[in-house]
Length: 118
Length: 112
Image (cartoon, rainbow over all chains, first blue to last red; front, side, top):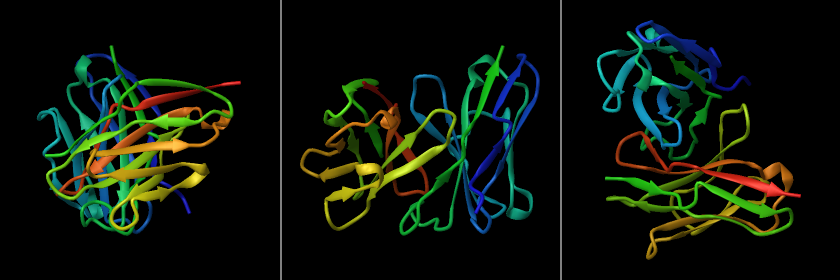
């Protein structure tokens, strides 16, 4: 069974440009999460989808970030326009059970997209 | 509110020595606690988790962790380090919502 896959693995863009990150969760997982790790700091929650609905987007930094999950399958995270402080590793995770995130099941993480804004 | 503190951003041990990675948490509700590992160029992989029940939890690759409520700790240990254990380790707590709160990570180096 395929795991959580993220595209691209690396992206280098100039300040002011737009970047779109993609996450394909494990098939059948209703819950999809985005996290971000800024270098040297903790991994921080961005938002949580249940199917195509945003359950919690309290971690989104500002309105330059837009996440979508049309049809409840893959998700995209767009940053427009990108700023230097947006650099970091963006992780996506999926799980079957959304009750407290993980009860009887675990959250499966992708390998991350390393975004560098120059 | 939930938070995690990992003491030591870098830990080095000799091959065959004890591995001890420290994690302290803060939680306003009974915590669910997790350790994840990230090997180079890979995603986060679950090592072990504590939800309820036995406080000593065994995970993959010979790792284990003990939930100590009185100390608000969930330290990760392995009796004998292997070269393949070199990776970054993250402690996390899940809160009342559906998200994890992660620590800043500990990079483990194993010296031959």
